[in-house]
Image (cartoon, rainbow, N blue to C red):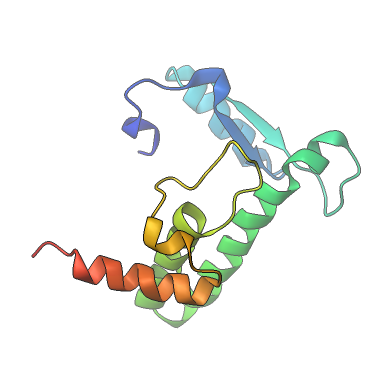
Length: 135
C-alpha cells in the first residue's frame, strides 16, 4: 500500500535498510515481480564492524526504537500506540536535526526553527495544528 503512493517508483534510488531477517529479502523478491525494483541493505549485528553497518546503523536504530516504543504502548491501549506513532512521525519529519546537511525535515516550520528544545517544539507543533484545524 505504501508503494501505491508513488506516481513513479524511484527504483534503484530507493533503499530499504533492514536487519538480516530473511522475510525482507522474500518481500523484495515479491515486489520485484510486481515492478517495484529496489535493493535491501542489511545492517548486521549491534556494532559497526563493516562499512555498510557504519553508514546505515543510525537508520536501523531509529526504526528499532520506534518498534520497541510501539510494542510497549500497544500492549496498554491501541490509542496509546496511535499517539506514540503520531509523536514519532512528527519528531522524525518535522523536529529532529537530520544527520546529513542536504536532507532537511520534510516541511520546514518557521515557528519551530527558533525553538531549541524538543518538548517545547512538540507543544508549539500541537498548538499550530489546533489553531489551523479545519472543521
